[in-house]
Amino acid sequence: MTDDTPATPPTSSPTTPSAFVQRPSWDEYFMTIAEQVATRSTCCRRQIGAIIVRDRHILSTGYNGAPAGLRHCLQVGCLREQRGIPSGTQHELCRGVHAEQNAVVQAARHGVALDGATIYSTAQPCVTCAKILINAGITAIVYRDSYPDSLAQELLAESGISVRRMQ
Figure (cartoon, rainbow, N blue to C red):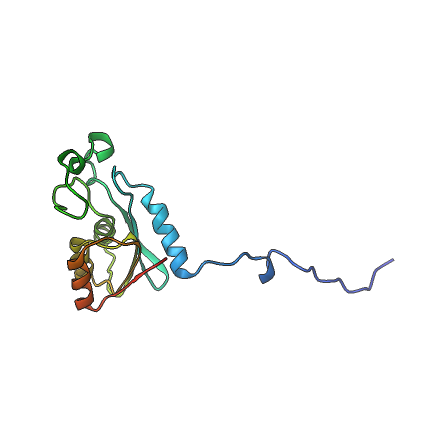
C-alpha cells in the first residue's frame, strides 16, 4: 500500500530563512571578530583588537602587546603605570605594539597588500597608528571605543580616509 498524498512541507527547517536568527551586519560581524582578537592582548591596561578586511575577506589581525619573543607586560608589569604616565601621552614609553600596528606588520610579513582595505578596531586609532594606516593604503576605519587624540582625527580627516564609530 502506498500513500500518494503529497508531503506537507515543514513550517521551518534548518535551511529555510525563518529558522535563522537575525544575522549580524558585516560591520557587526567584523567588529565581533576584532573583539575576539583583543582577548589575546597582553597589555595590563587595555585589550585592543584589530582586523583588516577587503572585499569581506580578512587580510590580517592584530592585538596590542609586546614585540614577538619579548616578555609581556603581564609578566613584567606596566612601565606606564610604574611611571604614572597618563593614557594618550608618551606612546613611546610602552613595551607594547598597538593592535593596528600589529595588524599592518602581520600583513607585511606575509606579503599582503592593504590598499583599499578597511580596518576594524575596538579602539579609535592614536596618531601613530593613524599615520601608519594612512601610509598602508587603508581607506576606511571602523572603531568601537573613542580615544582622545585630536591630531589623529585631524590627520585622518585630511587624508580622506572614511572614519566611523560603531555604537
